Image 1 (tube, rainbow over the protein chains, first blue to last red):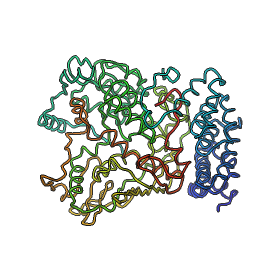
Image 2: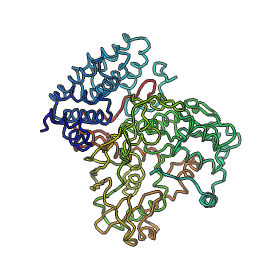
Image 3: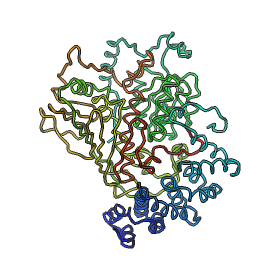
Length: 182
Length: 440
């Protein structure tokens, strides 16, 4: 298994082959790699930033495999902290919220609800909640529909509309004013 | 390599002659009783179209439809340079907008051509159907399985004629190969190899995120896609190499050759039961699709596999051994094999091109041309050569391939439910929450 310190060093290398090798092998690094990789992904050098992001994506996807629920929980917890840290650039938080949507669960819902009030990333948090399946995330959206900032309630209504879609109903017009696109 | 399908004068005349032979009137005239049946006034019984996304491929459509004598009454593009160029091409005073909803509101427009970046295809097609317009929607069909459900539902519920812009099935060579195989000339097919050049690489300096240029409404360009800052490495054209927008060649040009594979295998009502994708991402630039890729899909009942390789093994037709084909499909059966080339146009081995099915064999519809077929079907209300239902079946392949690549593992797939089996993370990627206010 790759060594975290060595991986971080390679991801910041000027040699693209080193960076490539590092991100390819990053998957098994686990939760302890999330914050350091997020830190690399925000570097001004966008080539290195990309390497950090792809390494983080591989960590997330590796933890998301069937049978690795404990790893997914641990990684999602770290991602939630990255997303909640206002010191992080917008795109680092946006990417973290996207990843939470793919592997997050019950433990992330309170944090996502809180971020629905954060004007910078509230839309990303909403999309993550919409993607997380199950009754808890749906209940969170329903509760938020009445409590979020007034200018964001239409966004929540959209998530509720989307969560109600079925294979048979999607694409058939909904005349509800709550989800009007005008 | 950009696809160029501008119509030369010679091809225009040939097409006109073919259209005349097929009983099609030129410019395309729809009988008034047909137009009335569909609730449209059609004062002069001509098909009037609106074109959404008029740069690149969309610009090709504007040029071609205009050359065919089709009135383009509306133009929509979020890049004002593209819109201005298209308006100049069609002449007169077309309605020009950067908001496709305004185009769909127009009663003088019967049908819509959609040639935007991929993340807009589904929602625009669905809304066009809801607005009572027939649709020509460019490949790739869509980005997610949920989008494909929406597109099929919309076309069927609103009874719209839809052509997906995967024009392989309008190529004579593709039809000949499909008839050759479906009439048993290579026996039972065991596997199909598809190969294609690699995705573009980041052979350029990493460009920085920046403010969008004055001519571009970046917020509208993004639309339903998740937020990202403007970067000139993405627009125009190179959005294709961003995974959640373009999905790489497999989801882009893969539509062409994979639609021919499905046609040949008579697989439009089936799907794969597993997928395994590996590859290597570009080491440079902002793009994140796999630069090289190997995918294997397994099918059951009948049992066969389809593989996709970037770059794969180029190969020539046996009768032309010095000309290796860099993009195509080879079908392997227990009695032989046959190659279909799919590049700027399709070609096939001589044995397939010369083959004529017996009277009681499988005969496939010969399309007069992909745009022509769509316009004809608007008149007759018949199914197009590449309807959205077939498009939805074909797009499953690249969508699940990209998901397999992303999650880094082989996935089992239920082709009826169009869901992964026992993989919750992969299933979360079958739909993509849109940014407000956009929704299906």
